[in-house]
Length: 271
Ligand SMILES: O=c1ccn([C@@H]2O[C@H](COP(=O)(O)O)[C@@H](O)[C@H]2O)c(=O)[nH]1
Image 1 (cartoon, rainbow, N blue to C red):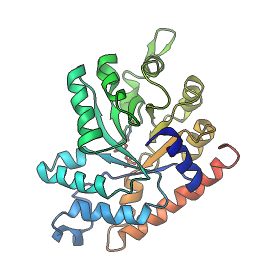
Image 2 (image 1 turned 180 degrees about the vertical axis):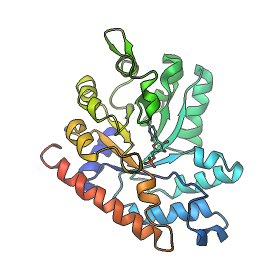
Image 3 (image 1 turned 90 degrees about the vertical axis):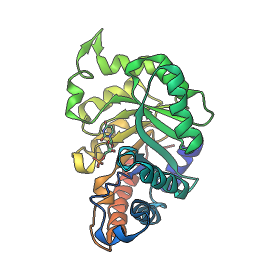
Image 4 (image 1 turned 90 degrees about the horizontal axis):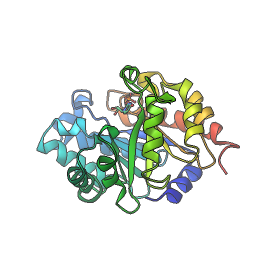
């Protein structure tokens, strides 16, 4: 999906909600366990319940990879089931020497046809650039993450600023706002305005609302730009909103609340 299609979708749906399919087999409702593919059965119900509200789905590959071949099959069924007009993210946090990165990119962009993949930039330009060589595909580079450990390196002084600022500026120079986004945690509210100033045009994938306690209001007020410019992810808060037969309706109810709030923040900001 290209940038204009994503921007149009955000405008149409008045939503920048990304539903995170962190489908933990140990947390899905028990009645699904008798299905041939319980993870896919769960995802299918969540997708059916949210596909008119969400603009993106993020599949965190850890929850699938841990199940071996069955997990990869669930992932494949899920990515094939997600409507083609919605943006898809493989949250795999890859990045390696150049030729290996190329094969990671082929895995997620060609074999599984995701629109984007999350990339850890620590190994530098040759580890990130292979993800930028695919038309209408995106690298989503870890910028300032939502976890406590972001203090260990990302928020440490470096050069004339902080390490995450140097990393984001440098990475941005390898791509464009049409093929690169950044992960910015919703728990990093006090840094969002600074990051938006640093990168006015880039999309940010923002995990950390819901279960991690980040503020949708703060991230939206400080992070939205004229194109929207944000994809705010909620995983557990949506997909595990309920735990019985009504889990998909419960997920929809929470997703609708996020969409309604996002509609308010978009008003007057998006052009
Ligand atoms: O900085 C980061 C980067 C990635 N994540 C991922 O996003 C989701 C968040 O899940 P919730 O249940 O909504 O907390 C999950 O897949 C993380 O691995 C992140 O949280 N922070």
